[in-house]
Image (cartoon, rainbow, N blue to C red; front, side):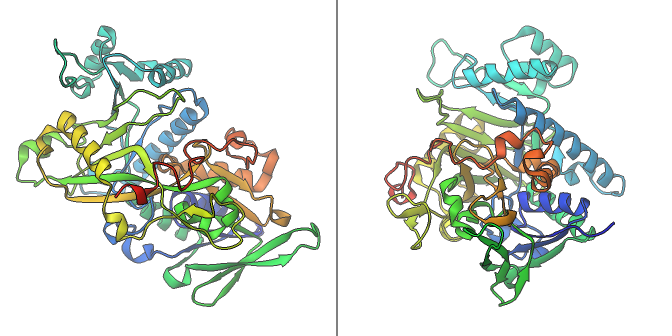
Length: 478
């Protein structure tokens, strides 16, 4: 086969690796540029890298309310995770459960009250539509309880008492037996090695840190510039037919025009550490015994927005139990460079430094403590082992932005970003859909094409309308 056009991808996280693999499978010449030295540290969270992809674990779910397309994409991805783990396990002799990239330990979706709320009803309806309702177990439904027992899921259909209720009430909950978590850093390291073995060329550190995009006036679309490649901070220029921006929360800084579609924001994370000698806790919070737990501590507001999302994951092989707060996704507004195409009061949100991101706002810590007191009571008075702001890239509507950037000529710039805090689970399949869009544009056969396209007409919402004066700006929270 002859080589197709050359593609330079900026970013070696979930989106960048997945696309690089898929393009290489289509015989493109692919180079990936990444400022972090993932080739040396294998995506270890201990490096403090400012990337959502660098994390102990991420939730895998197919529960998406009315968004049937994401439910189906999650199920496609789930199949791919299982297939990849099966291939990997066939060549391993050590503890296979700890080496799995996808752990199907279930997820307990705890409701705000003793009743099922709107999003959950929407999810159950779509599960029913796709013939998956039997994989969902509603706590208050005797038939679901009986089925959970027969399928050995009942021990994870946990009961939690609602504080300060008399007579005592229990939170309604739904156990999703399709769900679990992905060992995110391990998955990135694995797929990066697979991509390299297939011929994807990686540049890390100074050789991968992008200083600027190379531009020239288009001779075809004469009113526009085309991008001809990029220059890295070591002074080397790299030519490419297409430059892909897949830089996560740094995407807007690489390509400022994206600021009209995206915003850097952060969730708040804390961990507790279990000593293996504490066999009771070690066993209780193991993936075999403890499901992922999510809790909406408040119902949807009048605008249909979820404002109280909390979650916890089972312990890692090292003993870390991660707890997250996404009820408020914090922004960090700073003066934008002169000439930035879109700003709010001359500012844009950018990630804090790695050191600054080691602390979380007091209200996030308080929310986590409250959650822990109900759902992980053994840790109620324990100090956090670590805290971190995890920087995401939110879009206007929580859907990804995967399309050509029309401001540049000749299809020379392609965006593959906007994960909005739910992209990691799609690593095995996201790139296949993105590659089809890159290759075929509006003729793409991907069912995600209508949802990921460049959408300048989309209203500014999902919190992106708030700007620097909004309540999420972190300068107002510490």
